Image (tube, rainbow, N blue to C red):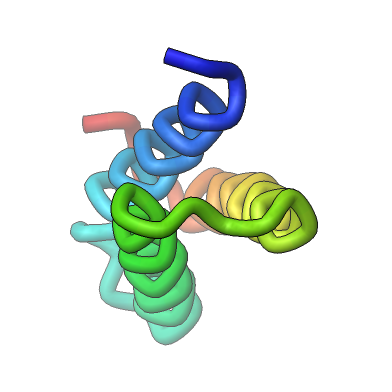
Length: 83
């Protein structure tokens, strides 16, 4: 596995973990985070057939990491624990 596909695999795992953690959060903000995670996950999964440009990969990685940070902060505030 090359570094690029490895980073995408990590990003895919982060999105899947967020979806799992957010599945029990019925708040509007939690649902919005889940929607964002699903959209990013679908985009990453499509790349298995057509790899992204380096610029697009960088943008999506930044979005995933930012979503992870803000969603985890939200989950901390609303009190959801790790499954």
